Image 1 (cartoon, helix red, strand yellow):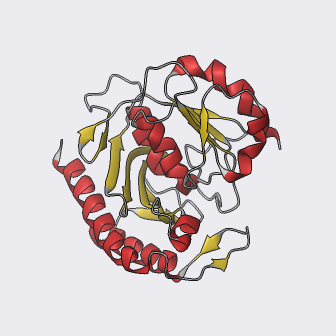
Image 2 (cartoon, rainbow, N blue to C red):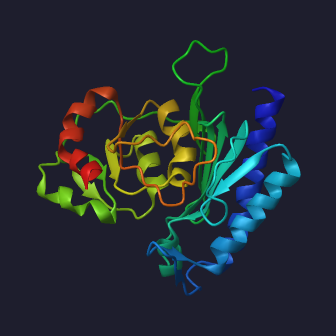
Length: 270
């Protein structure tokens, strides 16, 4: 690992650990407010957002930030962090332990590094993704610094497929796995990366839900399938991503696209 990537990793680890320790004191204790889109936000979300932004600007003054609770406009900066200070705010407010802090690093509009820390369950995922090119930089995905890979299994009633609350209509489809609803976009997709699930679908994820896991899932062997007309990446300079959703399917390997996509692709047409 080069000195630059060591610095990136250490920053992400240190920052999310520090933020997570404070958030654990607020976990299950705060009353949320409603945002314009109906999602929840707490003072903890806003505090964590400010803390992460300030840390980024202090350590990487040439980098920009795009965040759920702050600026939604991509400036076109060569390096940009896309952050979700608490992914799974509903779980966080209701005392359900799966929620995380998500940091994605974007280079020229494309995610190439992701770090997601889940304080309550003591799991930290990170990964590097340089695409399928013959790069001298190695792709890699890790859980608590141990390499992870997607499952090579075939679907069965003993395997999992994750859905979100807005995609329950697919329960009428013959999904060839057990269904799970975890309530956290990043964890839905990361459970595919570490082999716990064979696939997952989210009907309304935003770029800050996808930026970190984009690198980790693909480095682990997983595949993103865009179900809508627009693709989330590369980010486009001057675009406001605040109200844009990207219906997304993730599967553990390319061969499963034909199994799951026909059952969920209607979510991209609603």
